[in-house]
Image (cartoon, rainbow, N blue to C red; front, side, top):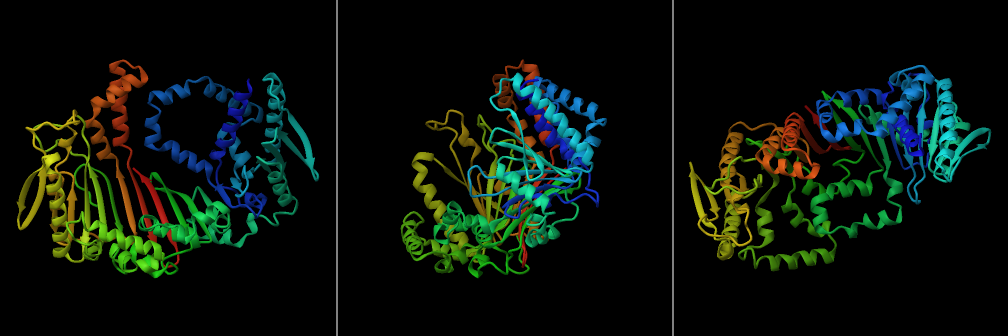
Length: 579
């Protein structure tokens, strides 16, 4: 067995400690061996439950039918890993789920300290059975003693000691020791020695005794597989981060896009994350003890929903691929620009407004922003057929942006003036023709490309994916890439006005839809088939089977949701994957 083989096997064995079950009450907390100076810690508390949940996911099961995954299972490295795993099972007298429960049932922690290159890192694997752990280490040492000389490796396994504890080393980047019932692995000798100091001092000066990390753990969901803790206070003091996070380093675009996140990173003491079950899926919840109450008023007014005014419902027309709804009050950004930006940025912004008026039909940017509302929504949709006789060579999803309006008449009039002026100025090149439609008392204004006119450079007829349009529906202004989507959104918004859905407290929501994605992939099946044949050198029948498996996999994949919420004293960012 070559060095590559045993290293692959050993790494997989350590990673497969993910099959361990809940830590018994009497099992020590592995954090007692992590020095208090650590800046980040990732702990798996229920690795076995996580492994079982992941392997039971329909998505994971379907992936096993794909050729690249089958090839991996048939590979020499994977077969040798199975042989190595079988060797440990035989020598230790247990199958891997039970064996790993004994070796790592107390949990696993990976921790690191920032500020040095390479960053000192430490892995703690807490066993439930100290005798089994020592026997496992003895077997690994035997393999290393055999395989390193056989591979003509320059490094050898070196045995030394620290205080009264035996330590192992291979080169300068691999250090290990057994500390009671735990296995320690580190990339730096000083990281290993710091962990052993914690062991010899019965956990003193370790993360287990740091109050802010214990407070953070108590605030996380109780039913979790694992969690992460990141110390932002020390991160902000590092030279590279300190300069990047300085308030004066933020340009207006960064403030608009990431203002809430930047405020969190600049002021919160730490960030935590917990991986939890979510029905038949998984959820990752990121949290921090800095909420709306601590955020500057000007920034809060721009990014966060007002009281009893959460983000609007997601738009979900037929064939939806992706939908997002968020709060971004650009009127507040303009009004409070002197509080949000420095003097030079304010001056540049106001000068930019003067220049922008030349291409905005003379309308000032400040006027448009004051007329706009605080809510925006964006949606991408698969439309199986474009609204032209000539069909494009490649189907491109339709998209739409929906802006709420404080002044529906004024905003709609301003935007219509700007859009019409832009189309008129480009008509010589694009040839766009006006296509207006009446829907009750609403006027949908659209534009179509002529089908009897060649278009230089568009040999694949991609322009026929687009028929841009706009329409005002109540206090919502719709801009869509196709007239067909514009029509559908009129109905969606009118129904929403009749029977309003509950608003979300989240400042932003985002959702991906598997069914719409599968419909889109099916519409470009021929292109996928050609790419699969060329990339993998498959016969047409085999390639077609693989493409159809891919489409079926996507269709059954479920939905992925992301919600960003600011409570009074806490920030939450939730990522959920569910069937």
